[in-house]
Image 1 (tube, rainbow, N blue to C red):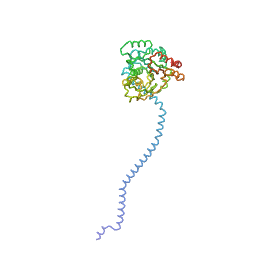
Image 2: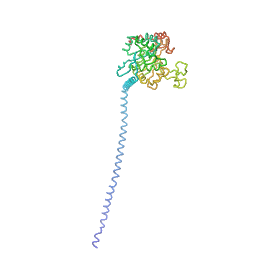
Image 3: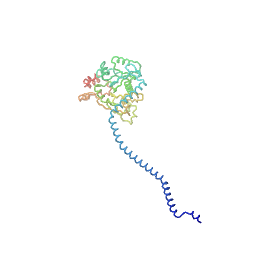
Image 4: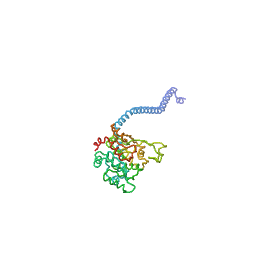
Amino acid sequence: MKSRGSRKISAKWIPIFSIFSFLIGILITSRMWAQPESNSQLISRHQHEQELQIVSDDCTSKKKPVKDKDVMDEVYRTHEAIQSLDKQVSMLQMELSAARSSKEMGIGNGSAATLEMSADSPPRKKVFIVIGINTAFSSRKRRDSVRGTWMPQGEKLLQLEREKGIVIRFMIGHSATSKSILDRAIDSEEAQHKDFLRLEHVEGYHELSAKTKIFFSTAVAKWDADFYVKVDDDVHVNLGVLATTLAHHRSKPRVYIGCMKSGPVLSRKDVKYHEPEYWKFGEEGNKYFRHATGQIYAISKDLATYISINQPILHKYANEDVSLGSWFIGLEVEHIDDRNMCCGTPPDCEWKAQAGNICVASFDWSCSGICKSVEKIKYVHSKCGEGDAAVWSALV
């Protein structure tokens, strides 16, 4: 009985065991909840870092306008320099394309023979203006009238080209028959005056658009000019005023200068200047787009080079001045309407001269630029040339 009683747990140990069990339970419970609490702290820390990042991004975004303003100020300060460089790069690209195109097409130039562009060809001569006077086989009297008035001759013509960079040539092609009497007459006249630019072109009144393309292509291949001018042989040109006028636009990359007009598109076949492709311009009675009158106009180097490069695919309309205007549609070209390039016959021209607004070019509007009277041409030359003496001394 005594041994059995010794195995029983004394009642005083029961509270001790209870307290010990409670403490063990608390310890185990605290360890079981430690991991979730750690995760909560991690999430809280991550949220805190995100908030700090948002605040940091916000501060950075507030600083950006200051940096952007500095950049814009720098761009503004260098804007003019960038424009100048852009123009130079554009010209170099156009000249390179023109050289390649000329070589591929075998564009000819020269007064008596065709000289093809090649790697061995001499570099083009840098000049200010190239003036091409459109003429025909039957216009010998007109050419002599021009030579006797505003176009210098002999050594003075060379001096004008050499010292002032102004090149003047009568432009003419060939007859349909090889080495005909017409061609031989031009060869003889060229040997005497040395003022022709012969084109690889068959002459014909209805081929003026093609002749214009070939003139610009040939002139670009031969001379590196700032401006290329086309003028008819019944127009009086004041070279000094022309040079001054073009000099004002020398810094512009693509300019088209002349007396701008927008005449009606003529659909009737029995009228002069009939347009066979009138339907392309909309309904009957519509007008052409703006273009310079054909008696005289000037285009900058980029535009002449553009014509040279794209010569095979430029469309020709019935009227040469319309064709030229159409070639620039869709391009970034500045059209400059200069009314001093289309003075009429006296007294209009005399009035302009008295007002101090001297004409760049003068011609007779009444006969639409195709005057038959040589005496009338001489009259225009003599009466509309006020100011020639004043500016001529500055040129030659």
